[in-house]
Amino acid sequence: MDTINNDSITYGSTVIDYYIEFADRKTLGIRVNPDGSVYLKAPVDATTEDIQQKVRKKAAWILKQKRYFESFGTPTTERQYISGESHLYLGRQYMLRIKESSSNAIHYQNNIIEIECRDKKDAKKILQKWYLERAKVKFNEYAQPIIEHFSTFGVKPNKLTIKKMDKRWGYCTSNGCISLNPRLICAPRCCIEYVITHEMCHLVYRNHTKDFYALLLKEMPHWEKWKMKLERMLV
Image (cartoon, rainbow, N blue to C red; front, side):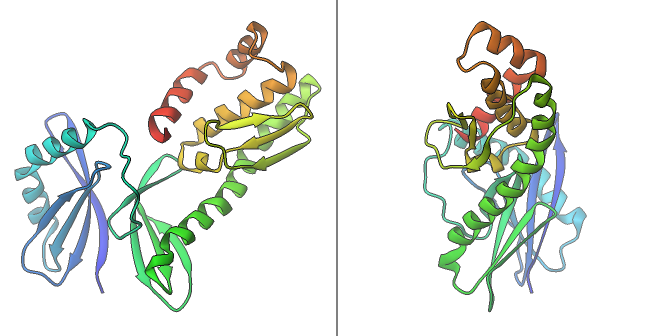
């Protein structure tokens, strides 16, 4: 059975991370994906030293390919949900590994999200369902300490929900219900906490007034950093 690992080399001042799939083949191949992830297919008997040497020889080409794809900005091509494709979860890049199985399941470790599915065409649906399930768990986990802290201001959300939104990361209704965009599950924890804190500030100051931003800055001094990181990663 093929196995997938991950490793990295340092080329000059740049670290090149890459994924390795060991398979029944004679040569080692390198592919740079449009999202910048580097994917290798290596013979099962290839050593770590052999692979690192090959990557170093191709490092200049790899970085050139990365810059080429970066020149197009955020990829607009439709995700294919196939093995080797890179996807985000809580700010980290994971490589997909799709396996046919008698049941549908997802496992993740060592920078790999493995999707077991009866039909590989269902990989997208299975992953999106998993993202939503993780969002329900993680958003509540991250929100609770923030909600408890804001109780000192005499405010508390009536409800915390997850809602698909095209142009917002979060929203606070006039009756105190906070909704979070499920896509936030792809972002780092601090980005998610920024959105939650932003919406909690709206329970104190409804509009984006000077007082609102003063409170946001007090509660999260580096909020602009996390807002920019969020928009760079997911917009």
